Length: 365
Image (tube, rainbow, N blue to C red; front, side):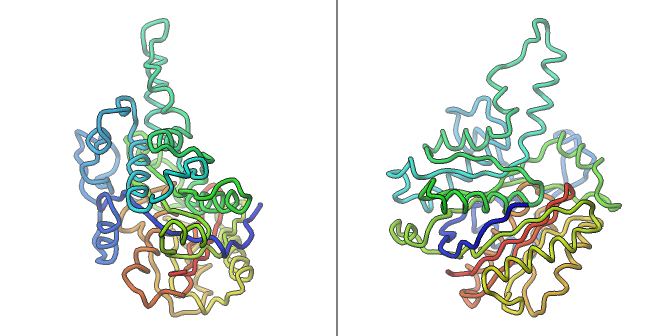
């Protein structure tokens, strides 16, 4: 599988989150560092799902957050993405408006299962000639959140959608790094988004979770400003972390995830000229079942001491957005603990479809 080359000159210079703790970095950081669970009981009448609790963005309503203009047919995942892009630009967008052609978006997502199923149902059950709402058709396409977010916020650079399960956030950062190194953009917003819906909940409930019961589901988005160190300086943005490298490998079955991830970790450290004992933070995905045990086993070989951050247990299984939330957790901890600046952080992911990934960051850049 193709892997990214080292990208030491690329930095993360901003981040924004919409999480089950609320809209914004402060809510996410305080909730995560306190260890407070964001999972809450579900109203069965509103959410007819086989789960008793979930991590929902509190009170999130697309039209209330984004306004009525352009949101009549917008689904939940697109609304979460557009809101998070808006927060990111509001806090870190100085100068980017003047470089709309050079500013793009790389967004990881699984798309909206609800939009796809609802549209298909209406096509099969509507009166002939198969009446459907054409305004809702764009929601069935996986790149709808990225496209609508770019249109709403006037981002005219590359617009890319990436999908890779639990590794999606790392894959999006990898793709964005390659675009920047190739000269296709000056600044990219990169991250991932996931929505909660009855349809997604039912599918996840019957999926193979390696013999364990599925974890409660979560939703949200985490997005990052990725650019060169010189670009951050020119835009008045402070580098928060340097992206030292990303590595990915495929594995044919879940019992071989450990060896695949161990190779990813070894490769990304070697390419960066770093030693395992230099790691100060490790942020694993830790899915349920065999995959989580395989990921834990791969990381047990790393010498300590290091701090382990795993937001999944607090905000739920955010699927496509889980890797992005792990990166956000690293940035949140770094912001709250300046002693970590200059230290290394490792983010790992394993997905049940057979992808292992590792990303290495130097905090504080």
